[in-house]
Each structure stands twice: as structure tokens, then as C-alpha cells.
Amino acid sequence: MYSEAFLRALEESLGRLETTSLAEYIRFYTSRAHRDSPEAGCVLPTLAPEIGRGSEAMRQTFAEGLEMLLARVEEHLPRAEALTLLSTLVGAMLLARAVGDAGLSDEILRQARHKLLREYGGSDD
Image (tube, rainbow, N blue to C red; front, side, top):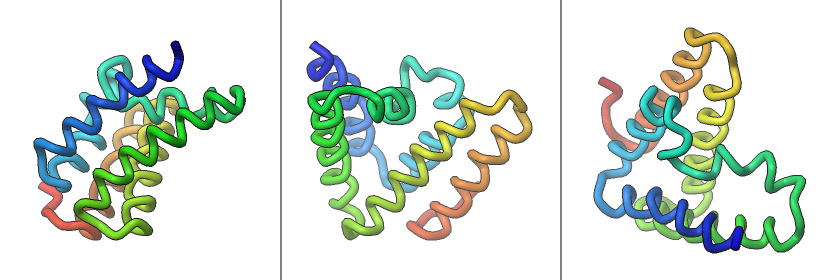
């Protein structure tokens, strides 16, 4: 049951990558709207902390889902860069949601967005 729910939730991120540019994906992922709506956003920063303490089966399903997302990003970037991009996005979102200071949360997202857009294309407007 967990596997189906997780993979279904991940499909939204996969679909967004299919229909937008990498720069648009970065902008969406690091947005306040994404931060403020975890129930409608990417499942990775929401579940990763719990999965790490979960069963081997849960970690395996998570790894499979991550590989699916990586494969989609690898259509735009080499694997090492795809891993860096996703790690930065997920880590920034996890931290931005966890801090109680709105200013710091905004700064985390802004800095991640700026760095990733500069590195992987697109302007940071």
C-alpha cells in the first residue's frame, strides 16, 4: 500500500518535469507556494526523513521512485549533476519547511534557486 501511494504521489513531480523546462521546475520547486503546500508538492522532502527510519521495503520503494525522478532529470543533465540538482532541491525544501522563521525559510529557497538557475540555466528573476 505504501509503495502505490508513494509512487502515485511522485508522478506529479515526474509530470511537471515533462511539461516544463528545467529552469521552470527549479523556480516552482523553490517557490513559497510549493513550500506552503506540502500536501500538493513533491513527496521527497516530506517523506525522506521518515523513510530513512523505515523498513528495507520502504527504503527500496523510495530508491526506485528516486531513480525514476533522476531518469527524468537526466534527460537534461548528466547523472552527477542530476543528483546534485535533486539533492539541493529536496534539501532546501526540507530545511525551508522545518525552520520557524519565515525570513530564513525564504532565504533558503532564494539561495538554492539562485545557485541552481545560475548553474543549470535560466535567469533568476
